[in-house]
Length: 182
Length: 52
Image 1 (tube, rainbow over the protein chains, first blue to last red):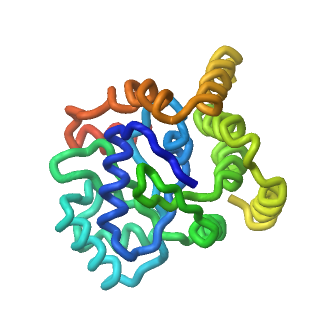
Image 2: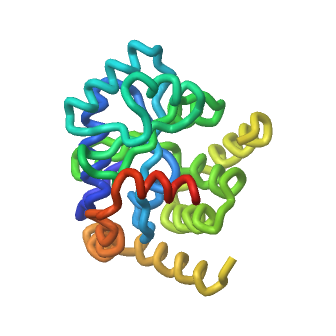
């Protein structure tokens, strides 16, 4: 999928952050997926899922992100792996700033592993971004998150992608949510 | 859910669907970029998150 658009500060932050991840696999999920495709609302944090890493693997990534100009605003280097392993997101912002920030989580739930495995590529102004399948995002927001903001995000995606949504994927992801829960 | 609000969400989504990205992204960025840069300190932000 290709998308050529005027970039926002949020887009630039995301592009810089995922570039710093290097070869670490990732998938962008939740609000940013809707915002990327035009949803007009503010958002201070972006949700990203990465595979479960060992402590040494995660600390190596932590150091790479630090060298690239990002810093954790919620945990120090020594406690970060313990936090993220306990399913607490670690938030990274550009050094000296708090907004926007990237909420990094390990893929510990079944659905987050599906999002990572089935991720799709968006060429944003010729730079690749990996995002969750749109069908999974819509269902997750409607059936799991359910806040007004999430229902609105899902409705936005339904309309923008109404000619491109896969009925087969909607059925399959719906069944997975039913079976494995949120 | 507020009916007027969801009506606006649907109106804007149709605008995005029916127009090229360089048109809607300019308007969208007015909203997105209005929150940056933030003057919040790390402590203020984390306290706000905890309370939320």
